[in-house]
Image (cartoon, rainbow, N blue to C red; front, side, top):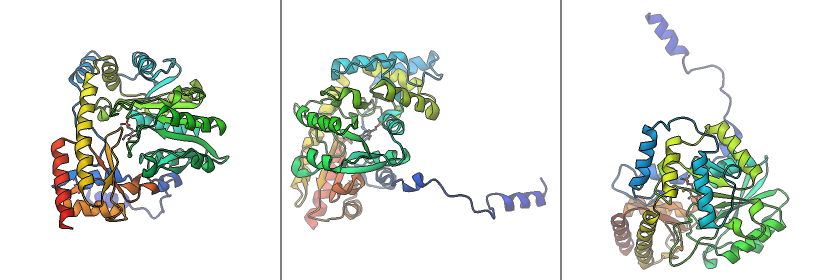
Length: 404
Ligand SMILES: Cc1ncc(COP(=O)(O)O)c(C=O)c1O
């Protein structure tokens, strides 16, 4: 290539006198994920990261083996956009036996790219521009950007520590307008760990029926419950089945976050829209991961019990340690694997508090404000991290706050 041609290419590549058009308004509205930023920030340093909700356990061996075996035998092609029929059948059986929910596997269940995929496609399937979705505040960080990306508007309904982080039905009722189309219910909750009982879910469903709302029931932490609490699926309550999209995932239950398998189950009309969107946006869920998911659902479940016992021990230790720090208060979560601790009497701004924890204690969590306005003053710590890390984190924080 001649020198003049190289000079010409360098001068013309990437630099244009034309102003390139802006990104979409939707994208510009997306909040930055605090979880991702903080997880990356602390990666290379001597910092204990209690940031991500990613189990530290390995995916159980029989699940990995099944995926390897199926891949070797040629399960390496596209599958149906709604997922392998055997997997949908396994999910339908599980939902019937464990959750008392009867779904037709071929019409009412779609396998997705994790629970994230199920939720995002559900919002895309349900929302028109300007439609409102009521989401828990504090609530999982991804609901809002997913709803914005689908053209909707996310409105947080507050959950307060005095109420055990349970929703106040009359307060939610007052927030419903004629633009409200969906309410998101998340039990067990990320970040608070609250688990809703049948009566409370019954009241939420009554409200949804009265106001004619869809319910998106995010149940990805269903197995991580402690102290005899049991998980109730929202769709089992009277009047709920025909308006509820039940979302679940293998990520948290089987330590399978990287495999990306989740699912949505609900009315045929909604599920077929989710499958059509899955086909358009993703083609299908990963074939090999679906083989792993079949082995996980149909295989032995004692692996799950062992992980949950370990989370319970970590919770007991870590919550007690947090409450020993003067000025810090943390409820014992009934489910999920997060400590949601109130630091507001030390520092009102959760971003500043988290920064202080990072620089002084070399421990990092997620500032509560990332989960919504009602999370301000709190820090979320994930105890999907080893007991050693939790002990070291608790020691470091105790020393820091003893110094004052
Ligand atoms: C409340 C909640 N729902 C859904 C998800 C989605 O998980 P996944 O996409 O790995 O299934 C998460 C992950 O952190 C979560 O905390």
